[in-house]
Image (tube, rainbow, N blue to C red; front, side):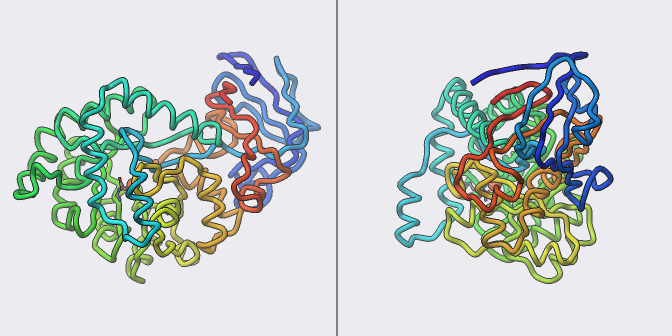
Length: 397
Ligand code: NIG
Ligand code: FE
C-alpha cells in the first residue's frame, strides 16, 4: 500500500476520474451531481475545486484515477462498535430457525463489562480499519453494551477518541440487574448515567421496542437527554409496529433508525419532517426479517439514509457496499438512490453539511472504485471495489 498525504496549504489533484458523484446537483447531472471526465483538488483537509479534468488547476501533487469512479466517502450514521465477544452461536441458531430477540444483547453486555479498556479499544480499531478499507470515512457509534454508569461512560470515552459522532445508548435494554425494577433503571439512565455520559456524547438514543423501552419511557429518556444538550435519535419500529417513529418526529430526532414496520401515518410523519429514515438492511439480512420498504418512503418524500448497524448481534457487517447492494436488490432503491443515501443521506442523518458531498469547502473524504461508475457497487455485489480512500485530505487506504 502506498500512502501520500496532504497537509494544510499543500494541494493534491486527483485527475482522470471517469465518473464523479458530487451529490451537488448544481455541479453535474441529476441528484448525484454526476460529472464525467472530472478532477478534484484537495487543499489541506478540504475540497478546494471540482470540475472537468480538462480545466483543472495545477497542484503540488497529482494522482491519476485512471478512469475509475470516485464517490464521497460513506457516512455510516449507525453502528455499535464498542463491544467485546461475538454471537456466533446465536447467529447459527437463528439460521436454523430461531427468531431474533432483543434479549441477545445481554450476552454482549456481559462480555463488554468483563473486557479491559485495551480490549475494547483494539476491537473498535479493528472494525474501523475494516470499514475504512470499504470506503467509510465518517462513522457514528454508540454505547449500549455497558449499562452501568461506569461502563457506559467508558464506552463513550473510548469511542470519542475516534469520532465526533458519539451516541449515548444507556437505554438499549433494561439490564438483568434491574429486571425487577425497570423504573429504577430509567431513573439511572436519566440521572447519574446521563450526567456521566453527556460530556462524551453528541447524541442520545433509545431502543423503543417491545422488550426494551416503551413510548413513555422513550420520551422521558430523550427529553432528559435534550435538557443536557444531547440531540435525539431513536431505534424505531424495528421488530414491530410501535410509537418510535412518531416520537422521533415529535422530538425532532435527527433520525429514526430501522423503520421496518411502518404505518401510512408513520411514513407521512417522516415525509413531513426533518427526521431522516435510516434503513439498516444488514439487520434484516442477518435476522432473516422482512425488508424495510425504501421505495414507499422515497415516493412519499422522506429522506432516507443507509447504514450498517454494525454490531455483533443483529448485523455483523461493516460494509456499506453490501448494504447498498441489498437496498437495491430487495428494498426498491435505484443504485443512484442507494449511493446518495449512503453518503449524503448519512450526512443528513447526522445533521452535517461538511461531509457526504464533493464540493468546495467540504471535507476531502472520498473513495475510488475499481469500476467505471458508482452503479457497480450494486451491480457487482460482494466484490471489494474500493481501491483507495482519502479521509480529511489524507490517503488512508
Ligand atoms: O440496532 N436494535 C437494537 N440494537 C441493535 C442490536 C443489538 C444486538 O443485538 O446486540 C440493532 O439491531
Ligand atoms: Fe442499532
